[in-house]
Amino acid sequence: MRIGRSTISILALVFGTLAAMSADQRVEVAPGLTGAWNQPSSGWDGRTVLLFHGLAQDMDEVGDLHKKLAARLSAVGVASLRINFRGEGDRLRTNIESTFPKRLEDAASARAFALRQPGVRADRMAAVGFSLGSATAIETAGRHPDWFRTLVLWSSPSGKVLDYLMTRPDAQAAMRDGVGVDDVPGWKPVYTKREFYESFRGIDLDASLAKFNGPVLSIRGSEDFLPRRDFEMLNHAPGKPREAILLGGADHIFKVFQPEFGFEERVLDSTMTWLNKHL
Image (cartoon, helix red, strand yellow):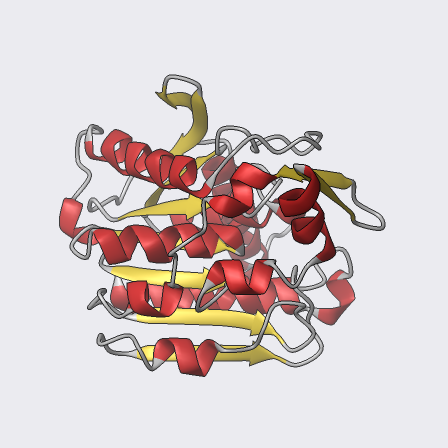
């Protein structure tokens, strides 16, 4: 059987991707904080990306978006670390025990772990966040403006987070009764406590982003349930370039379980293009 050059290229891409995916190393980032470190087997120049998941998800994210991004990064010589935020990072967990300060502690622990790995360059580190993971990345960058070279935000909150949260029935119930629940159809019930919401007092993501001087990319679907304030939020960011991508017809999770729409690929492709330019 004769194999053409195009077939060989495709096979090389497939096996290269599989090899990159298998490079995941399960690690204990800090006591009680687990994650996956993915270091390219060759061609790595020290660039590293930290991946922060959303509320009640785990390190691989919905539809394995973060795991897929880690594989793509590894294939082009970029290391990554994704973590399971304490009190959240389990897809089966329904009872949320985290607070926003605990998330910020975990993000700092993730960066410290990455810096302990031989070859990681502190000046070539990025953060990619999804939903509450984006808020975690923004606030971390605002408090430590020199920690990241660039940020990529997927379906990010903005502005005064508690003001938005208090428009939600589950948050109102938690503040009133101590516990609230958001029973998401097709997913799971998510129980949150008063302490979780109280921990967002004083958090203004617009003001935090204003302290970060690096490039920022925001990606959101037009059907996201979160307020579409990407341009307003990015106007507070002093760094350049700043870009907001709005995917018409995509929802908060980019319809990852409906691959026929192609939103997942657009999110991953746009993120890879951005990091290739700015990390």
